[in-house]
Image (tube, rainbow, N blue to C red; front, side, top):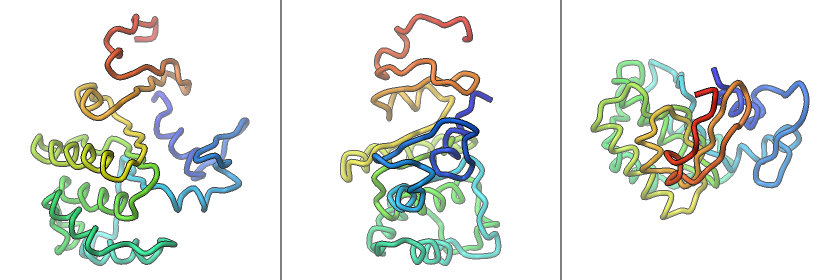
Amino acid sequence: GSGKTTTIKLLLDLIRPTSGSARMLGMDCNESSLKIRDRIGYLPGELKLYSDTPGHKIIKLFASLRSTEVSQAYVKYLCQQLDANIDGPVGKLSQGNRQKVGLILALMSKPDILILDEPTTGLDVTTQSQIIALLIRLQKQIGMAMMYVTHDLGVLAQIADRVGVMYAGHMVEVAPVDTLFEVPRHPYT
């Protein structure tokens, strides 16, 4: 209820602001939404995919929608790193394997910015660890910026450089992650 998902939707031009504007990659999110989205990978909090379609076909479809070619070797690398099952119908996969397919979709174009909305919520510890380890490696390898939305401070401690705290639709704090626990408590917490 703090406005995190709404903020993501504004940045991706999925909804429009009633006032003001948003910018990413030096561009207005509304006026240049297609250019921006072409450089972003996004995993929504509630991933919906074609349930009767195998993961590998969904990956192929989404890759065909990108303006730049997606490396099948890189997709294979992501699948191996996540130990992802992409052969069966997505609707019959476990929640963890569906999230892995979604993460592959978000990462396969080597985006400049990766936006993840609660990507590990409800997943077992092993799957969470696989995802976090891969994200840390990829941040270093391809140098992407990441917006990782979560309530899990332990994950943030592992993955984030800076943390933004939202309350009632407003960013109320931005601080280095290592000072997160040193920040004086606010009246809203």
